[in-house]
Length: 387
Image 1 (cartoon, rainbow, N blue to C red):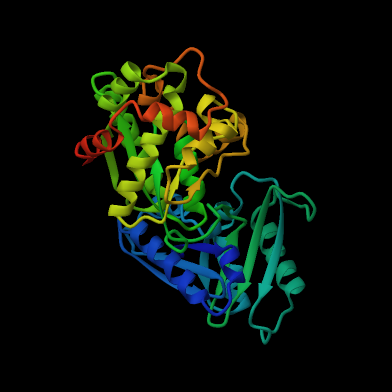
Image 2: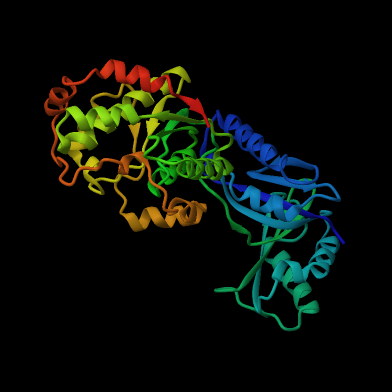
């Protein structure tokens, strides 16, 4: 039996110009890193917007296939086989592996791509020959060129040929690390992991900060956030997760400031602390899961008041999405079941019954004049630790 290979098809990276090689290298680096955590040894070879992954005899190709589906920059992941660039060998491969290529499908079509135009058969002729090979061993199959249950693809390359199925959808986007770095404010809810995922998909390297509030928040809540960070790292590589206690800040706000301003004031402290952390670790931006109007701290006015204290740009990729759209991405990425675990986060502690929906910067500054902002920031930042 022929050894199985995995073919990774590049997405929008192919539209890059003279710096295309930089993006290509990032994809290969990410693939090699992921495959390093899968049992067996793997090699990669790039050719014409496709990365071919070959495994050793003991390699876990199924695990490698699943890992490669999480590589940003790849739009399709296909299982297939490598052949000699000879029609007899290609047809033999198809007949030998028809069951793997077609599965339980009852209808199919064949397509062919020739990057080597010197190959003696045209693409339609290759497709016809391949279809005949399938019908010779799978008598239950029927050809359906419009809406088939399975597709078998023959690719004629410069030095060899590939035979593979249609494949499964990849993660898409741009390679991680090609668009700077961002610090994600990771709360443990549904929205913030999705926000991190979306920015990583656009090529951003992600680290995260979690604001805890002991004894009002539990270790179980922190473990939940750690789990979400680990899931997110499956897409964007290693994540440095930091935790900062805001207990003193929250108690000070409750004791000395107007209650209806509590939410936006706490948010301003979080953004100040995140800026300080991002500066220390040379992050380029902050990332939050805010969606306009979803809660009191996410009205336009509240967001403007929060932005006032940030020296860095704040990216909010969920800003125009409704909750169902965010949930769909959360489910797709595999975060949802963990995100809905019923553990508290600091944003739900001391939440006022009637928050100010239209705060102004002047109101926030008036309230902050009642407390030692700089001292609270320094003492909170001193609690920072890696999780």
